[in-house]
Length: 145
Ligand code: NI
Image 1 (cartoon, helix red, strand yellow):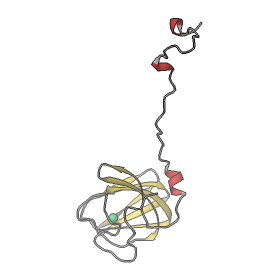
Image 2 (spheres, helix red, strand yellow):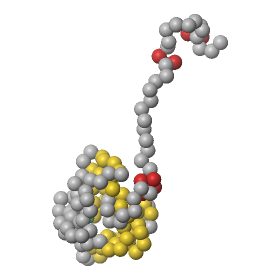
Image 3 (cartoon, protein in one colour):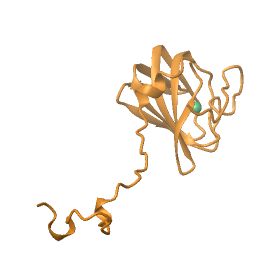
């Protein structure tokens, strides 16, 4: 017999705690590819998670964005699929899948991508995609998927 003295087979016997069927909490992974498959809009960041005051946002880029800056915060670009360039007034950085770059606060930048590029952006909650520039490419903020 397994379990020794506790398993006597007597109905109604006090159950050992380890024998109870416990209600399990649900821990769901956030799958980046699954999330990317839920939208097609370009230049419209979608929030997938928060870390304290920071948000993780997925965005699909193609073409040219506007020159802009974020006076209050740095902005991280992590390329998941494809390739993109972040232009600065005095140069540019080319990024492909598996590469990232952090744009310092206050520095003017213009993302662009020849073909559609999928990016994970990390920045504080409330940051507007066009920063101080505004304009037609300004996306709704805090849109969760
Ligand atoms: Ni920006």
